[in-house]
Amino acid sequence: MVGLEPYRRSIAPVDCKALPPDMPPPHPPPNAAKETAMKILRSSARKTNRAPASNFTGTVFSDEVVVGVAPSRMRGSVVSFTPGARTAWHSHPVGQTLFCLSGAGRVQREGEQVQEIRPGDTVIIPPDVRHWHGAAPDKLFSHLAMSELNDKGEGTAWFEHVSDQDYNAKPAPVT
Image (tube, rainbow, N blue to C red; front, side):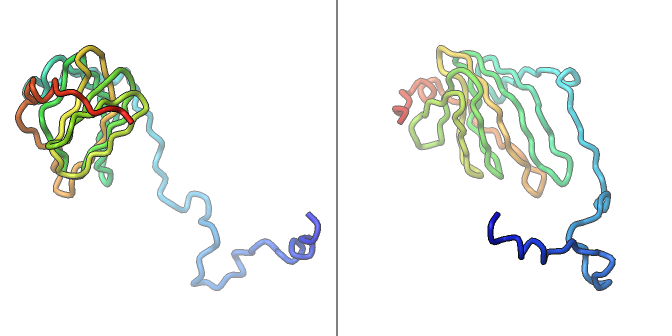
């Protein structure tokens, strides 16, 4: 590039040996940090679980994707709902994020109108908010559910089942 050549010639590589002893090098040397191997969790090592009737209405399956190991508190599962299936009312101390994968679903925050959710939609549910989610009455639905335990190790708080009246309420128009 025209005009930059004088500046390029004046920039010399840093000689780390020439730095004062109390000054760290500009980049950590290779292998300076404790190395942790990358881990691949093979799908063949995990089984699909049927979700418990105490927390779900209808037939629901769950494939655990990740359970965090300290310091991580992240949990993630792909949850698949048959038509009409849904969670009970519940909340999460650090909130929950749902990424919709396939089908047509429903989600409702307590006190608000039911919302329709479709593949590619992301639902961000704030901490300690009672809500439910599941499939539309006539469609299969799956999502990636992600949440964290709080600093006390507490996770999902489960409440009563969603009534048919609440479930069958007309969803808000998708805008």
